[in-house]
Amino acid sequence: MVATEYKGRKIHVVDTTLRDGEQTAGVVFANREKITIAKLLAELGVDQIEAGIPVMGGDEKETLKAIVNLGLNSSIMAWNRAVIEDIKHSLDCGVDAVAVSISVSDIHIEYKLNSSRERVLEQIARAVDFAKKHNLYVSANAEDASRADEEFLIQFAKTAKEAGADRLRYCDTVGILEPFMAFAKIERLLGEVDIDLEMHMHNDFGLATANTIAGIKAGAGFAGVTVNGLGERAGNAALEEVAMVLKHLMGCAMPLKTKGFLELSQYVAEASDRPLPLSKPIVGKNMFTHESGIHADGTYKNPLTYEAFDPEEVGLIRQIIVGKHSGTATLQKKFQEFNLELSKEMSKLLLEKVRESAVELKRPLFDKELVQLYQELTK
Image (cartoon, rainbow, N blue to C red):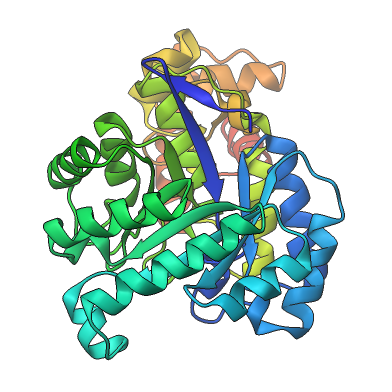
């Protein structure tokens, strides 16, 4: 794995688009799409790709084998219940890592598993031990950890570690954490158990990325993400958001090839039939599109006045559009692209026409429409 660093600690990116992302209601990736997504993730430099659930059999298992056989630089992980038979299917696929998952909150243990805390500890210990005896890297997944009794969660983490688990996946399964709570819970857990920890956050309250970063600040070394934040219900922490926060807001050296984010995000959006919103953080078209006169003028003078980072970092380009909120400076700059110099008086006259047209059309104007308005004023 090639990881970024935060305060001397290595931070690994674990992408689960092909597993948790595909669990988005109504999303199904074709086999060839899963293989392409895995290749794109590996080209970016993602440390580990959680590629599917072998026990499903059929296409799922065959596609996992195909991904493993690509010989990608990323670790390939398979998801399993804390059941020996599940792990045997993962071994058949040739993966180098497994996630072994079981619920740890009392509501899940009682109503979902119809089990007990003691039984949960027995299952995770047996499953982890079996996986380690077969030379697999093991993530012990604590499903619904954010709602678990904290003393029991500590006991679960210790049990998993003693059985040989390489890390603990802390799952905020229904997305009920907020960053301050996330920081406190992770800090306390790591104070009790010396184990690598992954933040696997859901976005039900729109806080998945924030909670992931809070957990990393508290000591977690793994960020669980999906492309575009795909995932069940409101989704997971978004790969592109977490990576750029680490790079720009936390000052981490970033080994990921972030210029590939747009290509990857667009491909996953198409494959999942979930179009990228214009205002999607990091990769949305509107990230570097300016219309307001003050913003456009400032951006012309120095892009950093209204942009947090260069659009080329993620594969985007800057766009200045002309519409209702534009100013004369924007018009003058735009017409320089047409090799036309606008006088101040002409700029004011044209701007009035532009605003009238934009209100009527309910959108910005195309270049041809701008030129046409100019020609009408200069007849």
